[in-house]
Image (cartoon, rainbow, N blue to C red; front, side, top):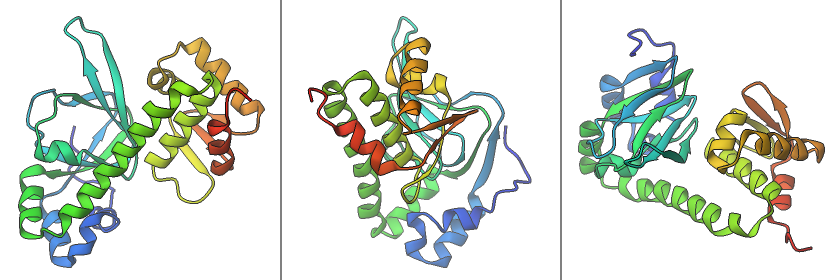
Length: 232
C-alpha cells in the first residue's frame, strides 16, 4: 500500500544519494514525482521479466531479490538494506528476478521513466551509477569467492559483515537490521545451524543478538575473524 501522507522527508533522503551532485533543480524534479511506500507485510513488488516501473530507495526494512525455479523452489540472492537502491541495473534492463519487500518496510519510489530521463539530461550520473553497481558486484564476488574457503562460523561472520556494509553502517560499530530467519535463508542453512553459529559468534563477542537486529561493536574485528585462515 502507498501512504499518501508520508512521515519521511523525501528531499532530505534523496539529498543523501548520488542525485545530490546534480543540484537543487534535479532534486526538486525528483521530489515532485516521488512517493513513499509503506508495507506492513512481505509483498511482491516486481515480478521477474517484468519492466521495473519504480526505482526504490530503502528507508526501512529491505528488498529481497529472489530466484525462483519452475518447481516453486526459491532462494534470495541479494538483500537491499537501508540506504540502497533496488536496483540500478533493473532500472535500465528488465530484471529476471522477483523483487520482494520485507515486512515493516518503507521506501522512497521514483518512476524509472523519470530516472532515465534525468540520467539522459545529466550524463555525469552514469559513472556514479556504474560505481554503485560495481560495489554490489564486488560484494557478490567477495561472498561467492571467499565463502567456500571458510568454516561455517566464518561464513556467518562474513555474511553479517557484508550485510552491515550493504546497509551502510558508518564507522566501526552499528546495528544490523535482520532476523535470524533472514540470515539462515541467505546462508542456506537450517534454523538450528543458524542459531548455533550466531550463538558462537556472540560467545566470541563479535555480535550481540536482539529482536530483529544484531549489535556489532567492532566491524574490523568481525572482518578479521571471517578472513582468518580456517586451516590455522
